[in-house]
Figure 1 (tube, rainbow, N blue to C red):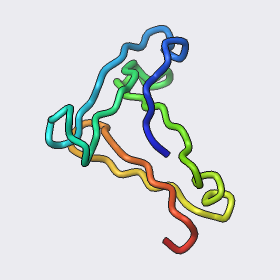
Figure 2: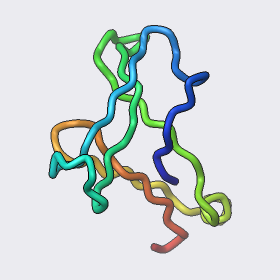
Figure 3: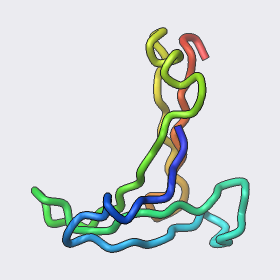
Figure 4: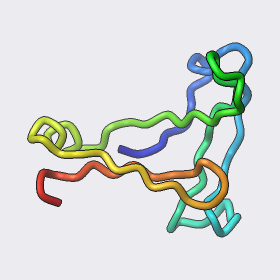
Length: 90
């Protein structure tokens, strides 16, 4: 899975776009690339949240269907993260 740009028609009312960088703070960093997010207040909590859009990459669906897992890694104080799809036993 990988974060993807957010199409205009998927921006919901009450949210706004932002770009979050990885721990380096460098928007050109390729090790932990920046991601586009939608910022809003959670519907049930009212707490600020950042929502990232993801798409499956080739092979992801097959790994998940075979019992693979998804790992979420959070970098730094902001919710910038990666999601990795692992095959069983990885």
